[in-house]
Length: 139
Image (cartoon, rainbow, N blue to C red; front, top):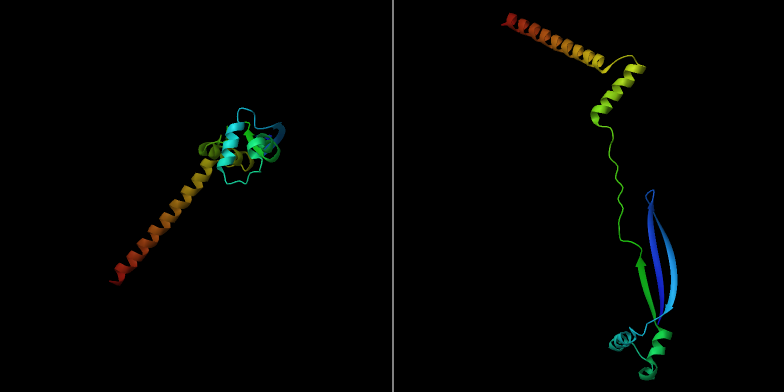
């Protein structure tokens, strides 16, 4: 039985799986495993040659192939990324840039929003009072 040994090694580079292939060959089985290989083949329903009992070792070496696949490592590498800037830092950075380029700050924007809210609330209450006053005049 001829044995072909493939050695696969893989590496992760920028998210892509890179692999290399190394081949080697040797005559198999070794004398240590010859009898167990013979017993295995005889237990299978494989047709054997007529002179199997006398030439079984040469039959195995000439007609069967063993394939061993060996991996370099089973270790898995995980790359994770975490945000280095939190939501508060983003808010401060946006405020700094707007103050630098536009001339307004976050506090100024909040003042304008508060002023618009107070104007809308005043208009709502004024309209509500006018409608209540008209309703009271009708009744």
